[in-house]
Figure (cartoon, one colour):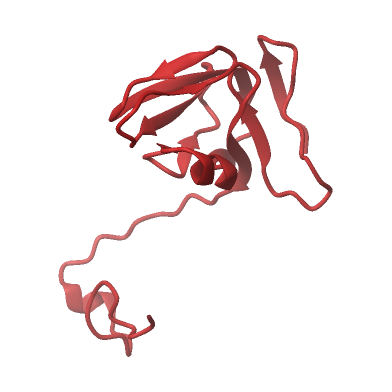
Length: 143
């Protein structure tokens, strides 16, 4: 599959290894991020993602290990009909200002396939059927 892409910098994402599922998303301008703030980080990328697919934006483990910068809405979702610049929401969870530099790899993108479903409304919870599972969150007993 090929995805049409426009890049303000002329750079396009690349997979760093043959086995990589994700490609890096790169910052296009230096930004200082205040403590306890959320920011939109520009990538300079615009994509025409085919219908039936979406771009999932996920954190880079190295960035999370080295800094207090986090992607608060992970995974971020870019739908196939979105054509504006792809930006990464970053939260500085630290007590001190942090920065991102132009050219820095800030997040990863994964192109994923999805299916749309039809929803059938039922009149009672019993119509959903039962399973052997009991309880809610954490109810499987797996720790």
